[in-house]
Length: 405
Image 1 (cartoon, rainbow, N blue to C red):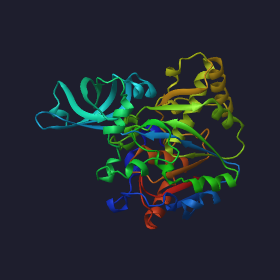
Image 2: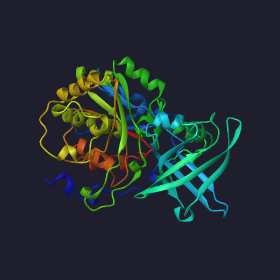
Image 3: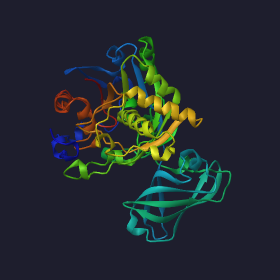
Image 4: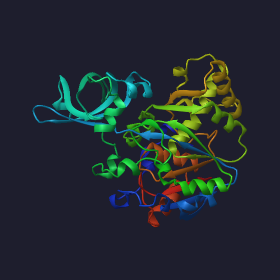
């Protein structure tokens, strides 16, 4: 069997024509098509009926992150247009504190038309909550293909969240090949989004509605939430020949202690809604494994690194790993685990927590397709062949699948 790091990404290619990519969602979210992969068998339904295929007493876990209006547009005096795409906060490095900043903050950003911004501050006259002010952007140090950008303004009654809400643009996926529309502000958010911080939606959740949640409740399916702020890296295809040479993006995660306890005591199937929930949940095992040998680590050092799952043979029982996290939180009087993950889930990975996945159909040669393949033990081609032959809509605004290996 091929070592995970030696997997060639060309083996995860398939023909995806532009007309198969859903440019807009259906008018009724829960009327999208649903592919059910259950123990190797494939059938289809509509998403509104997903409760019919979820085992009773299951625990479903959702990512409650909210997409921010992260794109800011500036015009230089020369007429050049500069786009500043906010990725994650640097100073303060806490999302909430950065959003609440009322004088200035620094973010890691991608910059469009960088060659036209050699130096100096960009400025933009804006109106926020009826007040007129000037927003300044100053480029600081460079980090690979990203940059630290310091934003400042002179109005203590206005915070950075207010500014993004007033003038920011929602960053819809680049593969939609269209401009953001007003309707995207609603349709590109899950109905349960709460915690601001993502620059991309956890799109598996876009199909859920109040009606769907009612059907799950009637079947005694428990629904809980965690947070992973989706980064722009989720759209980056693997450009290296082998995945060993691809660097996974790091993403912020937050999981309540009460949820970890519930996972420990759960007796039904645990079903993750979206690959972001999968990445968060599976990261918990490796965090708990770190705590097995040292339960006095700073939370920043609990980060899960890209190849950590493949470094050795892990024998610690899953429930023991999760209990280690609960004990750690108790010891430090914390009610939630806040850290980050860079985990790479690809064929050869051993799932520790997740037993079912609700997910959309992903781009060719993407890390998300690698994750799906690892979960269905290589049968992704069978699933995607069915979807292509039966007119399923692909990617963020497309149709959905329920995977129960």
